[in-house]
Length: 115
Length: 110
Image (cartoon, rainbow over all chains, first blue to last red; front, top):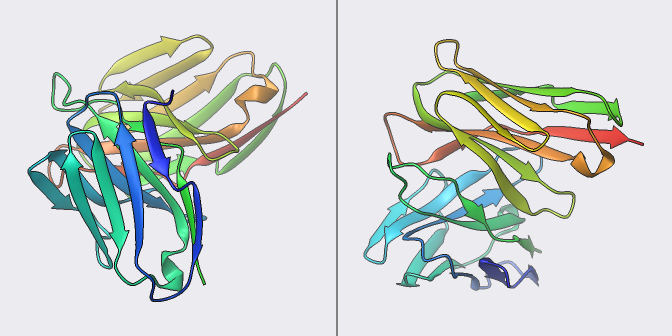
């Protein structure tokens, strides 16, 4: 079984709808991240969480919210989806690492289309 | 100017060739990551390094902190190495986030 899972894998929705993307991990990591990827652009961080009680905005958090329900679960919500939120969304996890930095493990991605 | 620049953006080579992908960055960093994104979209971490050189199978990653430059080498390239390779850096100062390059699309022809 995959260590980091995302649901759904694909979603088509309409402008104005509320959408939730879910991420679960079995790696036991404290740190979890949500990224979006757009064609021609690098991955960009939306939100990150270093433990259940810690939530931080990334560089493009406007229009998104998150919930860290448990160590293993981190959900991303689009309160009112708009077409420019059409993108590939990735969840990732990491341990803290000896020096505060560790490799990140990515989920398979969710392809979201907002019509 | 992007904080992380990769070159080339696209690279096509024949099976067996030695491949080099470059990454330059403009900020002080605590770590640099190399990632591989498969044609199906999945992303895999290849290396995380803060100095020197690391090797895993046919992949070698090097970093020169003074020159703010890293290279990813693939020896004896194979069509299954075809993917997008992404460089990302963790700044020493600033927010706890990775800054990603735009990626290098590598195609290895048989």
